[in-house]
Amino acid sequence: MTITLAIETSCDETAVAVVKKYEVLSSIVTSQIAIHRPYGGVVPEVASRQHLESINVAIVQALEAAQLNWPEIDGVAATCAPGLVGALLVGLTAAKTLAIVHQKPFVGVHHLEGHIYAAYLANPQLKPPFLCLLVSGGHTSLIHVKDCGIYETLGQTRDDAAGEAFDKVARLLGLGYPGGPEIDRIAADGDPHAFKLPEGKIKQPGGGFHPYDSSFSGLKTAVMRLVGELKQSSDRLPIADLAASFQETVARSLVKRTIACALDYGLETIAVGGGVAANSRLRHLLQEEATHHNLRVLLPPMKFCTDNAATIGCAASEHLSRGHLSSLNLGVRSRMTL
Ligand code: KG4
Ligand code: ZN
Image (cartoon, rainbow, N blue to C red; front, side, top):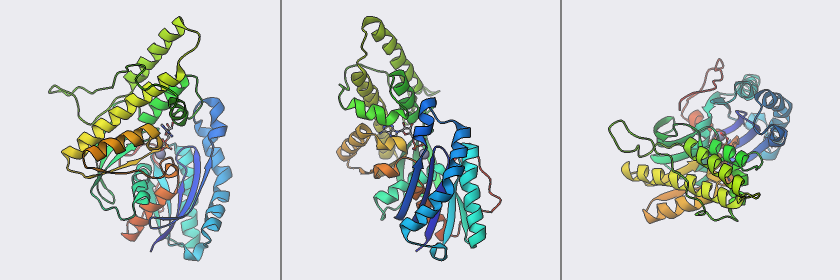
């Protein structure tokens, strides 16, 4: 079975993993969050430099943790797009260099494909077709997974991604970065029905609303307005209630579209991936609604929802075993459709 060493450096995690098809032999994630936190977001130039500092150590650690050495590795992979160009370059260049030096096949992986493949870590027996709700800091998509490398996007956000909305609303509430985990934690003490917030709907040209597309910028503006009003009437903001109401609105909006899409397309299995898939309310509500409609939900372990190299390695193993190799001339791209 293919053993792959995979590298992921598309944003602020320097990640290296060794996987045996869908079995994780090691997964090293060196987070830069503490470095970017004072800036309230990821600083691209700082991210690239940090990747350079950490990448070699992470590669050695991943091999050591897997108790393997180069002769046992069958292929090398790295995320090639989408993401921060300077950050991606560090991982891709390291992977291509290792492939040349150790004479291994090389494959570049789309970052979102990694998030999709988290589903296989939750269930190695999984077979397409299935629906994947992919919710991260940069994307919110409903993807029909037809086969390895064959994907159709059925729905997406028209403005902010779900994770971006969590991060922006967290900032409005004076919470730390990244905002998603902070809102998740604080919402546990709040009332999700304390405030009625608008669910973003996308009008269709022929009338009615798009069944699968979403919008989160109006929701963010509504929270901003509400915070302004509440600040005028009181010194203390009801942060927990605001966080819980916002989280509930996002979770309901995502779950409604996901269930409708799965039912319309006759897809009985729903996988979730991306950082926001770590959200406790989203996980609970999706599971509840899916059970109600006799659908199966695959919830990957939290550590494989956020950025990591193990999921990139799973996607790469599948590509390598099918002979899908990339040229060593492959470059990075900040944007790329799946
Ligand atoms: O997939 P990811 O690690 O990186 C991207 O590819 O963007 O996702 C990061 C996003 C951030 O916006 C973060 O706030 C959000 O995922 N996130 C969460 C939670 N954990 C991470 N959002 C809501 N609830 C969480 N528990
Ligand atoms: Zn991601």
